[in-house]
Image (cartoon, rainbow, N blue to C red):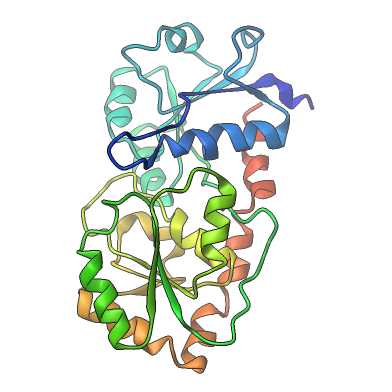
Length: 277
């Protein structure tokens, strides 16, 4: 089958002027990486007219090209932007892609036959496994505002139990992300706001390296519910991290992570896109 019949459209990523944080990273994950892996088109100016067209978080008001491609061969990849749900409700002939089981289970009932579930692939294409002699580093990655608690205080509390906090808010490439995970032993996530389209990508990324995550429970993590340690308060988060310093607890927490993450390797996710052709 000719997978050049897939065209991906996405705005180019850029660095936010305020803190140099990468914006539109989803364009890299959901368009650039997949297009390159499949040998598909990425932001073509022509030759897409007979293709299956996938638009990643487009500006629906400004992107006239989207209107031209809209139809039976077009999919709107929503990622984490709920505004697109409203748009699809108003355009019953269009179809969407979601990347979390929670969002899919809800929208497939509301829009039967119009929603496709394609999870995000993890960053660890090379299947590197983190080997450690001791538990020393706790990591936070994302945007500077993705961890909804003062990081300075978290850092101090981790120091009190003999652990060091490492953050990465200025990554620009997949290699930057994989280098971060190669340095940490535990990942912590603290996002307590309800977000309809939130995805468990960070948990899956860490799991692909054999690294456990401690996080506030979230509906968007439905498909990995048994693969991360839940903490409902910051005190519980610190307590769970402290427990992971025990080698037996750590081994138990990481037992099935690699097997779970294998389902999200790019070679598996690419097959889901092939089914659209």
